[in-house]
Length: 74
Image (tube, rainbow, N blue to C red; front, side):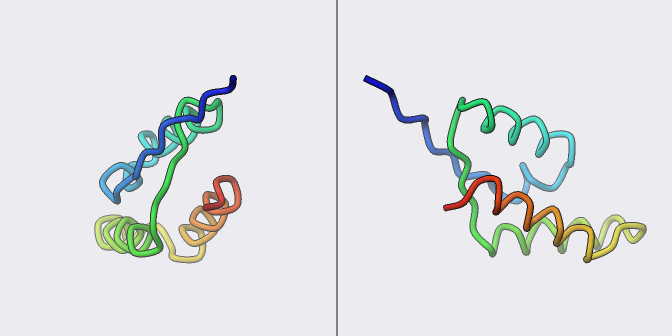
């Protein structure tokens, strides 16, 4: 019998720092857990990142959002 992975809600504070986001998504990719988030969570981490890192741009961050949603569909 195959066990279902634990589902974990990844809040904005875990998605904001790219290194933490990358580690968590890697662990999810190898099946340690099933990540979940909402569009509001995406909006929050992206807005905060743009506020604190004006060198980044919305187009690239939205590409990250889209890649995450494609890799881990709800």
